[in-house]
Length: 190
Image (cartoon, rainbow, N blue to C red):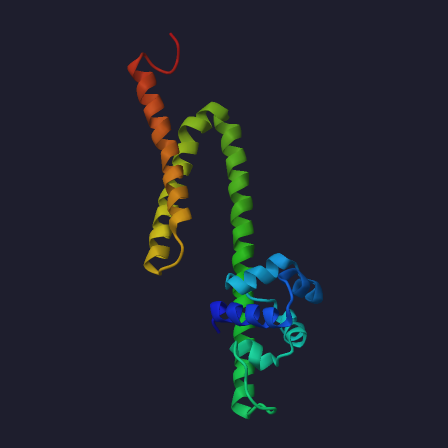
């Protein structure tokens, strides 16, 4: 199942009804941001939302999952099997997204704890001139590599590239500052 195709189909159905994203969201008890995300192909509705979404838009669940209208009144058995397969795929995708989001939360919390411990151990000045540039260097390299990967996949990458360059500028600025400080006699007054 293709998120982009699903989003295009969803937007077309919503516009046929003459609804805004906010009106569709209100009918489903979700936010208009969620509807926007679905229509852009950046996400997929929760498995529990698919049936109410199909009902609200006046299409069958199979049509919604296939992202196309099916002519005729009855759905052939092979199409029903395909619909079940699509729902299972959607459930797997949702499960993967939930695991990814949980992993991001755990990594963020661990990083915050580590940063607090580093600041406490090294002091703010030591942290600012030693750890912070290394963190920005690593983040810049990761962002640059990720932007390159997205470029190869022909996906938007320019924002990541700019963020990577900005992150790389921080250790560069600290290096230049320390170089100048040592040139004129060291960062610590004698």
